[in-house]
Length: 304
Image 1 (cartoon, helix red, strand yellow):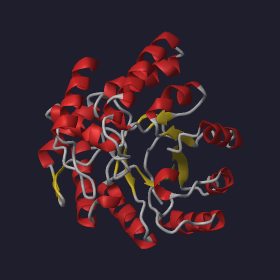
Image 2 (image 1 turned 120 degrees about the vertical axis):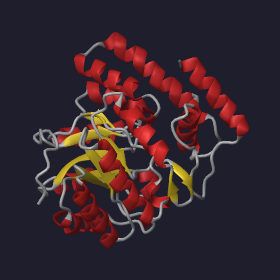
Image 3 (image 1 turned 180 degrees about the horizontal axis):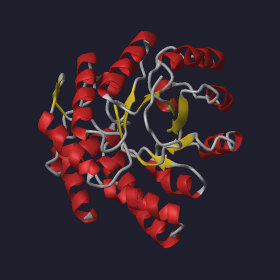
């Protein structure tokens, strides 16, 4: 079993890093180096790769393994690195967790297998079978918009009894669900409650959550760290000011396109315009065209 020194509970801003790509099966290596340094310069508390924002389901296994190795070497233990291991294959999830452990990651993150929707008893059994084979701490990832399946509260409560499971990232945008989990697991002071949608970051921290896995922290890492710090300190004037900036990003950069991929396109386009990394997006998506890029350029200028 793992002997990592990962904080319990894990707290703070852990950006879900985009995967800089040159083309369909090659990492933008220079861009990756610049992006990691850009994110870490914002004093974030960790880094999460191969999540939704990292386009993990669209990447080849070759790319996923290469990314894990490169990121671990570049981060060099400056912050905890978390790796997404969600897959339709039980065995592939274990393989990538084992490889991540060898590279020195601090934890892995698991959403329900997608494609075939699972019942809650099946999902719990799946976790019970998988978790003991994972050599590092495991975080659950509630992402029903992509997986079609919720981690129901009763399932989370039972899963939390497994020693290797350290917390949950909730991207349902359902704060009733989030608060219910907090109440039901109130005795577990070591269990991390992390939120995905950054529009809910301030509320989450003010009401006892531990942190955020916020996509916008790829672009403006310090903004989200400052919002987290302000919420922890109870500085409501600062919280309102910074929350408004987060909401402005949400309603401009994330809302430029017409489709559900607009968030990812907006983040990658912003990073490209900031000369950090390529904006290539894996199939079946494509990067923003010139008209959208000009809008993003305008928004970035206004925010500065």
